[in-house]
Amino acid sequence: MSALPELQERLWAALDRDDAVTLLRGAIGKNSITGNEANVVGYLETQMRQRGLAGVETAEFAPGRPNVWGHRAGSGGGPRLQFIGHTDTVHVDGWREHWAGDLREDPFGAPVIDGEIWGRGAGDLKAGICTSLAALTLLDRAGIKLKGDVAFAFVGDEESGQPGSGVSAGIKDYVARIEAGSVGRPDFCVYVEPTRLAVYPAQIGFFIADIAVTGKSAYFGVPELGHDALKASHAIMSALWAHSDQVASRAEHALIGRGFLLITTLTGGGFIAVPEACTLSLIRKLLPGESLDAAAAELETVIRGAVADPAISVSINYPAGRDHPLGGTAAEVDTGHPAVAELSTAVAAAMPGRGALEGAPFWSESPFLVNRLGIPTVYCAPGDIRNCHTFEERVSVEEYLAGIVAFASFIARYCGVEDQS
Image (spheres, helix red, strand yellow):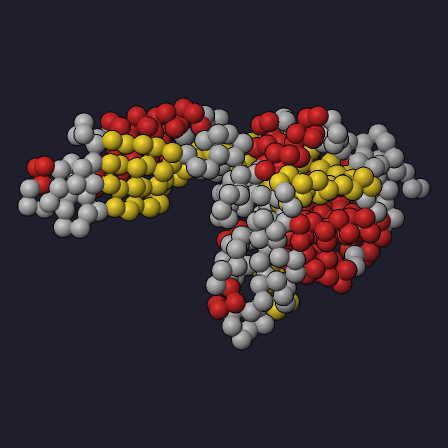
């Protein structure tokens, strides 16, 4: 196999920049807000077939909501590499009003402005999807034949925010197919969440807790007849903040820092009366190795222990189950895994200053692969998570093109190439 500098020089020379940019702009142009995944899946299916993938299939994980997958078979003797990402995006509420009269007014228009491609889903994560597909095309243009297989799967229902969705239904369907043997099992996966081309071998876990505190209302002049839910909520919050400090003091992960909890909402009160009911919500960050069940049980002990009035009732609900009924588990891959180092090196060679090993400050779907299937998986793709889900969502063309070259060289070196001497 060619040395990395020689390989990347060959790839840069073969790169069709116009084709790559057109591919991404076309994907952004398909409205695939959660629930509408079929719009972009049809586009991706066509692109996958045109780019020479075999076994391209779609299947609905919910009515009218398909996944799409396919692969390129190698000549044999190499490992199977998987690229995977979600097809759905968050909403565009307020986008047109924010950019009224500007080239960016259409959230699906994908204008190129000052070297950046704008639009909903540009970074999260259509740039990653298109980087992986364009990388395969680049290998073909460079005349590089692979020994190992390269697989692609694009799944829906990752984003939350739309009613009745956002429970990872798409990847649940896909990993079940791997378990059943109807889809090939990969040896290593790259989930194409935006990382600014860093490589993330670790990610946080989380759960969300909705807490309802119920007391008894009473006229303000006779408060002794009531049971103050707001006062109880204050005691609960104080206990939770202390608990967060305790959690943070226990351990620090080299890539994703410390665990904690954040109270995100508080509602309640009474009209010139003792408040009868309050609700609050929180999110708990977990580190790899922490048990969601144990963390939730500990949280409940803290909450119930903070309520002094026996007439106050507390109920706790966990609304965001993902790969676990309570939430999403944390995940971690050995940073010494050869493929992790290979990907990091390929990215750094394609774009100096990138390719560092970092931790994901978000939860996405790699735990379905890492924890459920035991398949080492990292995040890596162009795009900046800090502007995703905002009116500023965009991706740098330079970073996107570098990602294509990086992915292509990683594919070649990981899967192995046929002797072309």
